[in-house]
Image 1 (cartoon, each protein chain N blue to C red):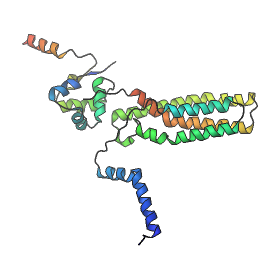
Image 2 (image 1 turned 60 degrees about the vertical axis):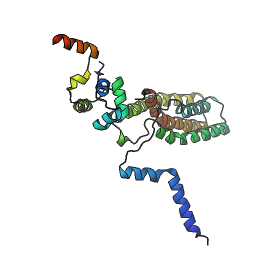
Image 3 (image 1 turned 30 degrees about the vertical axis):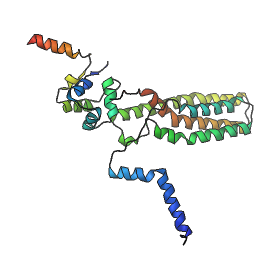
Image 4 (image 1 turned 45 degrees about the vertical axis):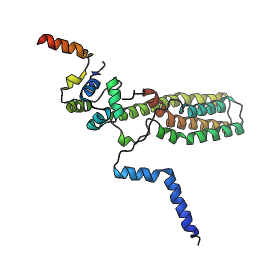
Length: 177
Length: 81
């Protein structure tokens, strides 16, 4: 006899949740047992999303207005941006901050301070530059929107990846004991 | 000003692993590795905890000047006696 449809569907939901590994992680945390997870320095992988976002931003600025091309590039960058949480979790700052010891807390603080400092500088210089460029080149509203969206994507990508990059380049591999 | 330490020497002398020392003083074992290599300057609290673990004064473990080699220290101690 076949099980009711609703039960099968709920069981599938349960299976899909177990597949994510979240229940195992939560139960391990609740038990208080130490969780062994690898958080390795990622020196090159976070450069890719940043490079894609920079390329999109430059494309939106320099090329003659071509909405299709920019939309395609935006979709590509959005996919790359969706990978950022995975990159962050695998990187040296992926451990939850409440598990940090004093060195890791200092590294986290330095990484985010560097990221926010750089983003603040870029935005302070970039915003007047973009406004002046828009006035000089007589941008249409549509072009302004495209440039603004690509600048937002660049900001988000930098925020997602710069701390991991900074922390990864600051950590030198330790010899095995 | 750099801070030098002899954690690795004390650890080797007493046969203590990085993991054991890290658990005793409440840090990640990688932090002990970075401390030993001089890549990280510990807080006063952590430095005191490590000194307490080895049962020595903090000056025996940490110094602003390079520690002389153990052979030199032993030679000097022999001459004094």
